Image 1 (spheres, each protein chain N blue to C red):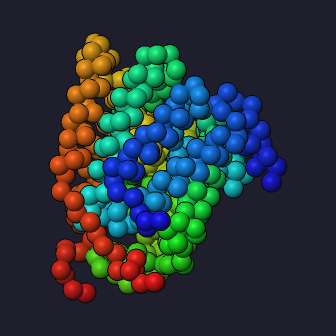
Image 2 (cartoon, one colour; image 1 turned 30 degrees about the vertical axis):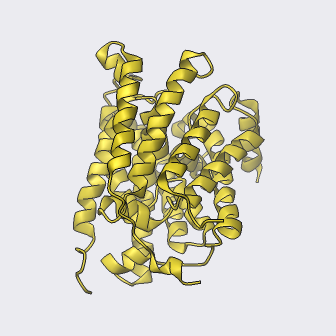
Image 3 (cartoon, rainbow over the protein chains, first blue to last red; image 1 turned 90 degrees about the vertical axis):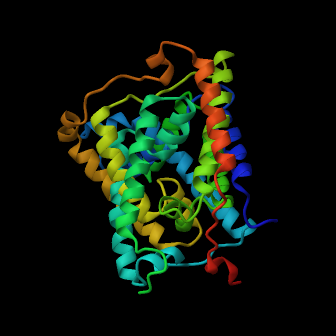
Length: 170
Length: 196
């Protein structure tokens, strides 16, 4: 088995999966992930829907995405163990070592902050890249287009300031 | 434990497919993400610092093909659009925060689960950060709610132009497919992949 698939195979596979999820033969709804993330975190921190308005709001769609995310984890695990055989414990991505630093502590602190910003930002916007850019874009939703432009634009600008220029030795 | 059972019952009671189907959709989603390497820092963050073009090419292909398919599914009555509301303030502020998080963590919510399943500890820390982020949002929601407007409603591009749905979808997917095809192949080869 090859260790990875090219972009166009990935794109075709992904859109076939989207048809399944979107149509009446599947779940009759588009794929999203960050509402599920929010649901799981409410569950972890014991924020009940009776007490918190937002927990009540994500009660249904969050549960769907929460179950889907469990599937996502096992899908990834299955592939990394049996197909790509890429499972190994690692702490810092290679590109980060090249462009940022080699400190595990720094990577962990930034990961935590970035994870926080990701989910908090996605909740503010009402969706993440799965919900807004992929599912939203596929439905030609105005919200998805605005989100894609703002998020990717900010990402590119932040990347320029946050990471060292190519070829700069530490 | 109790809440996990509640999550599964909520899903099986809702009209959006059986629990097994939802798990299956997630499983495939995770498998495709891992197999195409979308979960890798080098691919996602690398895209935004112009080191890799896998993510934009694959995302463009997905949106182009899905938008065509969705159009015909809805047209034939086998699906219905479920568009997210255009909350301008929330979209812009949220998009900025999300973009910063995306380029630093190098994965999105869902890809970081895939990354964890590959044994990446930094992704696990990112998930924990996300858990805290989600909880803070839930607690702060009554205050945030007042700030995120104005809500322009659940609009699609064809609503702005007053129709022409099929033309918009055709133009959009053609532009995306052509762009994806002609984008240069920039591939970040990770030395960590070569060691076996």
